Image (tube, rainbow over the protein chains, first blue to last red):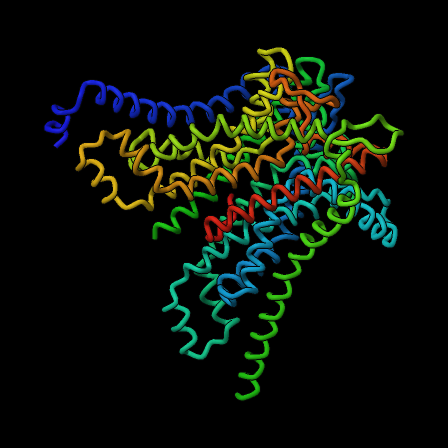
Length: 301
Length: 281
């Protein structure tokens, strides 16, 4: 078919078509180059730090740019703590939303209201969460800390986790809902016909069936939490010391980059920060890839 | 036996109430944020706020015109860069479902979607800011464009997949060359999906701060030169919110209200176009 047609087409049109195809192809290539480019840039720029600090960098506890001492452990710990606490807080809520929208009440104005709310939670810019956290949440946390005789910083790892928890609810919730909606109704109906209550159907049919999908949703939430910068930077307190408790101020990998990148005045300092970005990049990419793999294997079944 | 059944039914009801309660507790922080920002921001917004430059610390009043202009310019140029690239890439991915390059490109888009925005800021710093020797609004646009790409490519690809093949075949049957089938038949048919992708990604990046920290950098004065540092709404909110001055907090509240209002409006508008519920990951 192509042959017959092309013989009639003018030379110009064939040329235009070839040009168009090449353009499409090179733009797809551009995407690959772009991502590799980010990775290569980070690796190249962190070479000085990789060379002179080595692997020790990751578990050294002191971060003192003035004396040229760089240890990333406080930030690794800060990132892990904030993300983990945020996940623990957010999971019950996002699970509840997923079950409500997927199982109890998939349609109607009430679920539409909830859907729009979840969507808007994801839409609010992180700098606004940070601003609100700084001026509203921090005083509340401070009052709470005074009551329980904890040093009342207000700002700190716990406050950042609270803000993060709100911010990541939508991701696990929307993913979980989609998974729960995919449970075949024949399975559920079978259980109902055997006399199972609604809760038993959720516990014994829906959750086992969607287990890995729900886990993938949590992974994607975690990926968000690890890389979240602005809101955390604004409420975590920004100290480079090892966090002494979850209520103490700290720093995450992303927040220390945000704070110190433009101030980094010598090569090693800058490259130590970029190595942090490299770690962040690799970790989030791996977590996201695992999550997406699971979801893909799910939707293909 | 009867008691046991009653217990099971009661337990089921109890869990249901608990789940509904938990689900709706989530709406509280959003409502709290919306109400608080509205209350704080609405009193600050007036004509002077929209048309004047920020005043130095200690002086009442002043506005955020530099950030408004900056945000519009940076986002506009980011869209200008990202829209053609992502539409074409979306076309390629939907046309080549099984190719090797398509596989890797799809993977790259997935990866890009998960990359923390601050990392993109750093990459663009080394690609644009360092060679040019100065922070610039242009580099900010590039960083934001990189963030727009995955969202728009995904929505374009998914929209194009839903266009029936018969449409394309009809085009070929009329003797149209490939590029005309795509540009004149397929893309016009999927305009609403593409448009919603554009709106959604603009809404996402309009509030992005982290990639602008090392690129557009911020500027206390009005600047329309894309080659120079430029202020933007999120940067202004970040800088002024973390400052200790009440006058600056006031400016930040007003800016936060404008930003929030714009972003939410874009989201609602997108929803009206698509009517499909899916939180963009």
